[in-house]
Image (cartoon, rainbow, N blue to C red):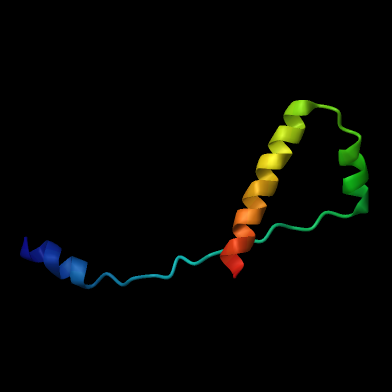
Length: 60
């Protein structure tokens, strides 16, 4: 018990405020995506966009 308390006291807190950044796609990527007609793809892309918006809030 004493050994575990000594180990816990030596633990330091870390800052987990990490906000990943999404890369910006170019015009060629936008043109190729607009040609996709798969509804499942557009649902997936909407979910990715929602995640990107949530990460934007993390930056503020």
